[in-house]
Length: 323
Ligand code: CP
Image (tube, rainbow, N blue to C red; front, side, top):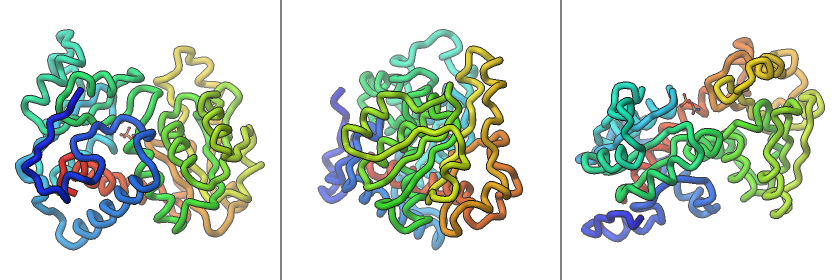
């Protein structure tokens, strides 16, 4: 659907390529677009560190619509909007909204956009954000659609890789854990194929990376391997991207029990890793990285989580024509 655009804004605020756009998939980003968002995120971090907040989005309202649980994505979008001077309609726990009475997703977003300027949506169904965007005239940002994509997470993940190691090109990145259902892995892999990287997919056999993603990597000539043993990669990787085995995605809980503790990153494992590398995790974790690793300077997952707010500030400013 054609989105409403406020053409009264100065041209330099609306020609960033994201003004008035939905953010549904990482496929929308090229290296130039990523560099732009990362630059704005750096500016946002600098602003927050110096002043705490700004009035860039004063008068703007975000509808934060979460049909699935969230701590980081939900609260960082709220913090992002409020630090930029905007306001938020929070709908967390759809049992408290008219969704519990059977209201459809299209009607819900058409309702919210009458009050808000931008909608952030997390939903358990693949394609739900695209469906919402089809009906909404205001920008929709995908905050995770089932096992599909989590584009804002992938942006903050890639930003963190660049911040931690100073580059993305030339790195060897291992993805570990639930690569089948892990939407953060799917989205980050799609972004990494824009760079000169080598990928190692480490998973139990039942949680291998989907074939369509391997085909995309082959198509662009990105080297990758699929492995089961984390010890086969730990010495060589620059990024160890660990994921949770997601109980909520399993219909067979016996199968979940078999793989839930398949990999545990602990100090003994990390003693084999490079001195300069980063351990990342989209969080929440449920045991796959031991607490003893948290003090390791290579443990980047809390810095990664913090970066989420700066990336989401950049995205909100960009789609609302204020970046
Ligand atoms: N990483 C992430 O999406 O975390 P939440 O589920 O807490 O939002």
